[in-house]
Length: 320
Ligand SMILES: [Zn+2]
Image (cartoon, rainbow, N blue to C red; front, side, top):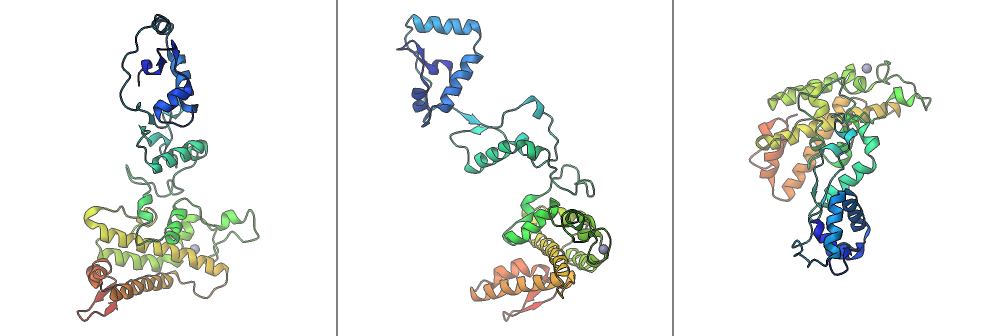
């Protein structure tokens, strides 16, 4: 858009906001009014004098810029935001301006959310694990790996909450409730790292995960457990499966801890993990058998026969 497009040559004045709104395809004059104000304020005295002269001399109207004016929308770059802390949940510094006419709904939503809550988001670290398990060079917590077609919402949510340290923990609960701050399994102070990584009670589960991952040529580590595996094209089916195991393992730890607090009997996280993997596979197999899609089932679940194998006669055997 040029300054000339904002002038009304017949009246010898600036366009009124309503007319400008109509030209821009907007229903309300709020944005045009601001544009007019900002353009006027940005003019140098010499430029303003030139425009006044042109308008009052009755200069014929030059052709307007064709098409709707190009508007772009994006975060305002403020001086204080030029060196934001790189590891926060704020995306504002990473959002590039896009054309307003074709801005995707999701972009507008993100921009609005991150603008409204900019101050809160900028002061919040992206993961509680950054000190204990520093991400590798150039690596970011991989939100996309936490949820997938295989990892449904409630299970993915536990991984997400764990990554943010947003799971209930004795050391926090003690401030508000009479619940002791020790871990119900081993009587040490209940911290995030202890409950999900260090406690002896989940070592059998981690040994099982280590063995499963080795079959897929992967090395199990606390780092992989928390940050999960990036999904890469050539190894996509393996990556999705491994992330499902990691998510189910976290869920098993989470649920058995809750179970112990509620005095439930089954508190063996390895057993809970195994049975949830089994029921997952069994449900998928029954579905595949009834929809005649055993090939797809085999491709996804019987990878290297680590978990199960499908016999030529169409029955299946759990190997895990
Ligand atoms: Zn412990």
